[in-house]
Length: 275
Image (cartoon, rainbow, N blue to C red):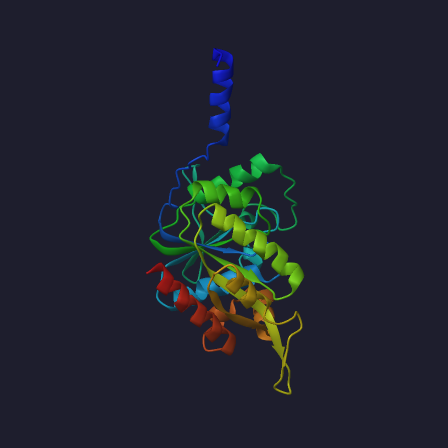
């Protein structure tokens, strides 16, 4: 083999060899928990916020990071619209919400400002939120991921030590198509999936019957198909929607509510997996 061909062969091997990435934990945190859906509009952010406060009710020090750069919703969901403190011109102090440390791009820009950014700017923003926020002594940071399997997901998969992921979905087929892609992405990037949650699973009518508006059993069946745990069902409930619109998470304002107790059960399952 000529020297030129040998160099080309070596270059090709280097390209085909899987890259190894150094994954670092987020400073100031013990465990990183990712809440993902792959599909938008399935109630993932409402789930993430209520899960965070359910974990706090169980005695854990919790942080909540809204990683959706294009559509941040955390300020609305916790009823906060203030600018975080800037420390030494380099670092950002998270916003406190009833003892939960919170950060979102929504705190850094005006509510109606569109984020018209390409990939490199998104990656830079994610690095700011993970490297320059002064998280303090957290047991768990809950990360509310954006929909899809793009730049944000890849940045976390390559750079951040993620201890586990929860995948949230509604039970209809169109949502589950993206969920299956998300599961395979996490498996390929070696992120441990703690389990799947069936959100908006059913609606309980005044007659006491359950109505499966978005279908039935799809999330649990997908969990079985990919050999993942099924963490539970969360029904449609008006009180959960009202509390989200008010910026007053139900698991915080009414921890004894039937919906809050469902979140508590899921939170307890997650803590067992982290142990």
